[in-house]
Image (cartoon, rainbow, N blue to C red; front, side, top):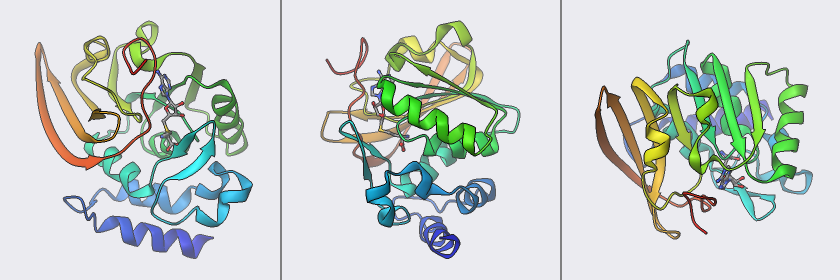
Length: 213
Ligand code: SAH
């Protein structure tokens, strides 16, 4: 598994969608995390292939390359408090957890949240706080966050979530239609929100109050 993992990391380093992934912390985290444990038994042979894999409940674990790319766009710093919306398998959460100080992650499907939590417990990730609920409105009780990442396709940039970003905070999400999105990065500078658009991607839909009905 370790060799396969190293091959996966070599592949994603040369980002075909844009700039190479230069952040060694991300590459090292992905070399270390046993990605196969985040994937159902009958799909584990696909754990180190660069594509999305079904995780049940009609959801997918994102392709490793997009995980690396989104993490790169977040420009994580060690002391960051991060909000992740769409825990899914928990793999992206684990990558965040290796790099940043504290991760808050929300998942709307209880079975997925439960499975991810038990993996975090087994791997002794003790800087992750999980919650079942509608993340399309963020997690206002725990705000502000230095970084916010949505790992499901949002129909538009959710203002209610941007308000939960701290000053100089960074937000990353796929925004677009149900079939096609672009990765968006937004940096907050006081009352200003500076937006940049990156590669095209395809995520499962963000559901809930500010997502798709
Ligand atoms: N980063 C995850 C992505 C999983 S797919 C991984 O790589 O495994 C996106 C996840 O977002 C799904 O599990 C889906 O159930 C969840 N989701 C969709 N809408 C949501 C919402 N409003 N609040 C919380 N989670 C949501």
